[in-house]
Image (cartoon, rainbow, N blue to C red):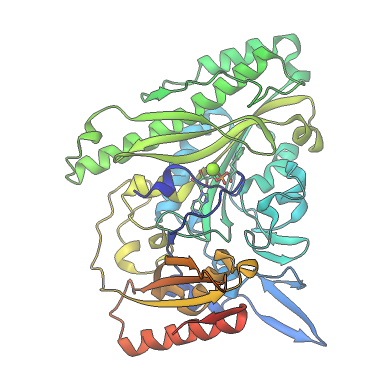
Length: 472
Ligand code: FA5
Ligand code: MG
């Protein structure tokens, strides 16, 4: 496992500066190229371009940065396919929580407003998640949701059970590696209690609910206090309420993790793995986090094959979000699990792009309601080409923008891109960057001639789109 999976640089947290050498994969499966024409078109009428996503037409503007290859993934709905690992994982979690009073929502459309994705959740105006380098905009006010939290407010308003689950595809202009893809799936979960309904009994009711959650069977480390100045309690909730809701949240997530990872372990043992980790208890740890709409907030990490993996962000829902949804008398928690990351462990899938494969050798391996370990099929050899250029220090190319250009030309044939060399010329103060692009197909061998053509197209597109000078 790479370091990337253990600590997401999640767009919700502050970005740290890029390391000198970054490595990430670009993956667009052949399906992306094939589905280009499927449900999106851009047309120009009297200079006004429109973009059609899932059969609906939207006006474009300066914010529009959604490529067809990404827009077309909106029709795939992997979480609704009963024989797909993402669909199997979704129903596995849903069935575990069903008896505990959760309603499942699986059909929310991916096109949402900036209000739903950011404003309703209290994202500050200058939050990096709002920027065009991080988010796919359809136009200034409309985007592809970057997380399932975009539907929290609506569900708090309409859901009739104490809890709900939302599963959906989400989209981010992220840097990419084996565990990051520009489209992925999340499952949101939330649980609330009503002050009006429980009155003075509220804390007692939460305590009883807490005690009724079965034990997860995993070993958990949770060294931090339930809240403190750096991860504060909300003034609208008492110390006891905050502590109980935090405990209920953590115990519920531990239950889910135990449920999923015990099955992963059984499947791996059945498939013949002798990894010693598989025979000792599963370990989890809680770390503190920050999300604009929860406080206190945490993330859970699971020890898996020698590394801590970040699985899920969560926290106590802010009063402003609940009152904004018209249920200000309620208090409760919410979480967001990355389904691909969880499914990679559950099914032993080594590369996140495989989930988008339409290859029968992948799809035929999975059956409804069944956890099985993925058996890799033949890997075709890959090869690389480098591109180096000079740029002004003040006009550096944003890596997410460079990614998008390479992805738009190489599609599924690009396995990964890495910045392999970077320096500043002592006299001109110009910066030189060299990127290595690995070309590799999951279904066939590539010829040198076709790789050269792709590389030529990438180089020419980079030099026309960015203020750079290609080095020979
Ligand atoms: C969120 O998206 C929050 N909405 C989660 C949340 C919900 C917090 C409710 C509080 C209350 P974050 O950006 O950390 O948080 O993403 C959540 C999970 O999605 C991560 O833990 C990771 O498992 C997964 N994830 C994030 N980016 C990617 C990506 N590019 N590819 C695959 N999985 C990803
Ligand atoms: Mg995170």
